[in-house]
Length: 341
Image (cartoon, rainbow, N blue to C red; front, top):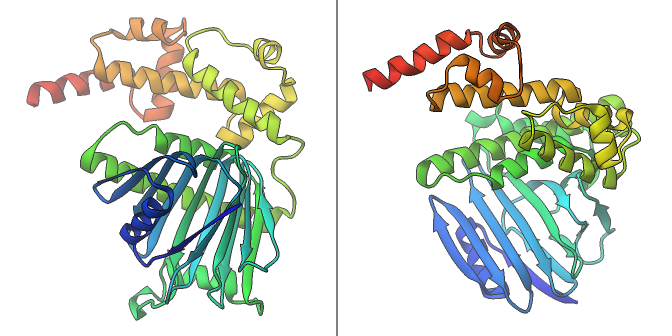
């Protein structure tokens, strides 16, 4: 087992320490820090982004070569950590001797310490890991923030608690995993990339806070009967649907191909996308149609055929429901914008 320490007040200092400990190549673009590691410690990528209002985002996408203990200590600060494990397993304790708890794949966690104890993270060797930590500094807030995010978080997690530490291990959540995948799929560069990254980080933070609220209201696991393996399979099903939405996909086909019963498929898609399988296929098709209308010279009939539909009137109906605009008017608007440009 190896032990590493992070004692830094800024993202820049954090990544300087990470590079010193793990080695690797560090790049910085528009305040996004990316450390590519290939050393005795392990292999993978660590990313970090500082945002406004004391919020920062840290992501480990790694396979460590040794069992690793990472001690995170933020001097003079008392952040709330919103954690999520997309892949693998993450252990946590407050201080080296504190009670250890485990976040499994797709689980959320909220962690903070009144005594500003070190956050100890435990990583297993040779296990692919993707885990994120969004930290929000709640100390040293000004009067102008009395009705802002930090004050709201203090009220939510400490107002009615006499404990020194706050620990919440929440339900499984596939929507957060989907947003993290979107974040890692961003191909834009420069300022556009920076804005997209910051936007998605705020969405992920909002989903984690919402998960805590939902769990308090429901007092039960929102994943129902789904296992972690089944949730992994559901992610594969979602990717298949996105890649083949123009085909006539059926529940029976998905069941035969992926081995999930119709009830499991519907439960999982409701959990991950907020739609039934049929509704999600339609949603994917409409989004692809919007891109084709915007970026190609296809007429509406060609677009309808390309996305796997046969009825132009049905396509116009669901397109208008989605975008409050007919496909014809949308196409003309894109042409007029091109001419004026």
